[in-house]
Image (cartoon, rainbow, N blue to C red; front, side, top):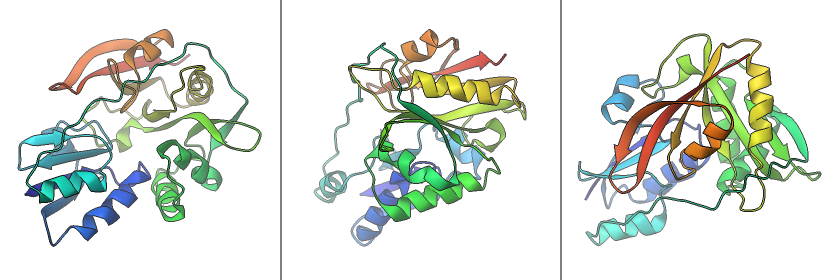
Length: 249
């Protein structure tokens, strides 16, 4: 079977681990790998708004992080099935400590993916460092620096997705985590917006209607004052992605 793997550099620390996993299967599957970091046309052609995209046999599209079981099914000439991640989301805002995300604590942000891989965290830190930003977002952590929630951003000019791009527009690359008892995302998002207003006029984000992947859900951003600019992509039985914007004051 043929597998095309599209990824946005090391924006997500799991990308590093997925690339290593693909290396193990390179002699068993027809694998092609594409980094969209500096290829906006490719991202546009593929309607890509996730940190990774997997296309099997030029037709079947998958968006979840790549796992070994997925590849093993392909070896059996079976097509994996994928369901959207739709957790229960609390509206009860909570936080313990809000800290800036910098080069020094990217390993904390990597906890959002369940990854404790030092190499993956280092690659993510290097990716962010190339943006020439002092702060990459804000984290909601407990007293032992365990991640509760967080949000990251880049200048829209650095984003390969097909979104509005302007030097005075920021883009939320990811926001995490979800909890059925507390909302740990709203407070770091508020801190980020307060920080961004010194340099940017507005901030954009891509959100699914129901799922929290790649961001969201839609109701979360609407509650936080974002304007829904409409649907930018639909994937059959998986997601309906909206572009949202908030004017910073």
